[in-house]
Length: 468
Image (cartoon, rainbow, N blue to C red; front, side):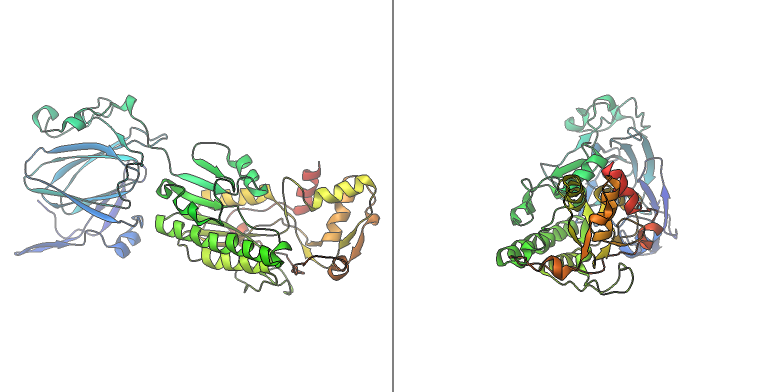
């Protein structure tokens, strides 16, 4: 019999993520009423905001109807509209909890949240039982499913009515025992721009486990809208966008302007659409070029954007778009150094070849090594830091490019006095191609990322390790 007057409560079970909920049911002589899913109240009570897209009802006219055990790659909210069931759930996900069992009786005053990959089964205990479930994805022939036999000895589910006395479909009878089950893998993380310097650092850090999917520009080109259908996006939990158009000076040309906007804005808008529609977390890498560099002091995450050139404008526009995604991290960085050709390698080469360069001394900031950005990204994801913007750069004293060049010379055993500091205008005075304006101050405040538990390394200490 349905129990009236319960308070809305949510209880954890032995299966990670499987939650048992008691529901308020209001009744009188006419019948009863309940809110089967009320997003605001239930999320506040501790249920996930799982975004159901479909509501299904299975009506069972006889006692003992038994169905399952089925695991799908989506979440479910299981409840009973009329009647009563014995419900059984078995964790069929990859990991330590694989095979864990939970059982409970459900009437209209109880419901269960079933996370993706947990096998679901039930047996009716009353006639005219209506079993209902909300799901947050549509059935697809391309999705990965898993099944377990109702009579599996390892699970040892204590069915109230013996299985040899009930009606079971031939399909359910044919499901494998636990040792033959194909576990449901975790949702994947897609790293875009895997062939770039940050993409390479992310691969070095995260490795090549099956849960990480790396896509170079040959695989997914943000300037080509066909990538919208390049993946089954519901199989992913996270997209890390390490791809961008970064030719800051070429962006000032007519052709470069088109390419920069196509990749950094139009392509990012499509990524934001994918992330929003599929409830993914979108990690997007931003730049100090979104600021004009005129601030006296370090730039905080909430400082107004004021880009000077085309590249900075496209990055600022991309940031504004990504900020509309419900689950997003914008990682703003500066003066990036990684694998391949870069400022540090150039200065070291000049020192070794006996060249005495002129280097800009009126732009100030900190180097950021790609391994630090990769570690910062991993940290906000693994720690479930609050969504939003995080500055991630090297820590320590902000220096000019000329100061850093002198440190490079010192570290490779050359005389730092061989560096001559010049203004930005002097440095580019003889340029024969368009030059993008640079922010004079690129120092980023790091209090927010530090408060989230990640402390970036001192950029000069990182420089020494990089050259070593």
